[in-house]
Image (cartoon, rainbow, N blue to C red):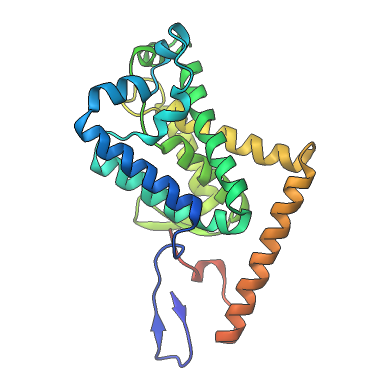
Length: 249
C-alpha cells in the first residue's frame, strides 16, 4: 500500500511497473514459441525440449538453451511469464539490459545442464528423466528469484499467494521444497535447484573476484536507481516507509 497526500487519499499498486526491454523480449519469445507449439507440438518439443539422452547421445547441444522457451500449457506459461515480469523488471532496471540478459541466459542454461547431470545419478526418480523432455522457463525464473533475494532480502513476497514473508526466506523455502521432492516428481526440480545454484554462484563469483569491474557497474547502477527512487519519493510526499509498505510480489 502506498499513501500520498492527505491521509484520506490512498492508491494501490501491484507488481514492479512497466515491462523493461529484455523482459519484454523474453515474454514475447516465449509466447511465439508457445503459439507455434500449438500447431507443431511434437517436432518442436522433440527438437527444442531438453531430453538428456538427445543431448548426450545425439549431440543436440542446443537443447539446454532452447527448452526454456517452451511450455506445456496456458497456465504453465502464464505463471512463468508473470514471475519473470514481477521479479525481472526490477532487476533489469537495477542491472541494465545487457547484464540482466546475460544473467537470465546463464541461469536458464545452467538449470538445463543441472537437469542433464541429475538424469545420470543412480536414483530411480532422476534416471527416468533421461528419456523425458523438460520444458519451461522455471529454471531461469528461479535464478531471478535468487538474485532478487540477494539484493532485496527483506522485500515481502506472498507465499502461496496467501501471506507475505521476506524474499530471503521465500527462496530458502522454495529451494528446500525443490530439494526434498526432486526425485520422482513430475516437475523438473533439479532444474529449479540448478537455477538457484547457478544464480548464486555467478553473482557471488562476480563479487569475489575476476569480475570486479562488472560488479562495480552493477553497484553503480543500483545506487543510481536508489537515488532516483528516493528523489521521486521526496518529490511526491514526505515521510519514510519500510520494505513492508512496498509492493508485494
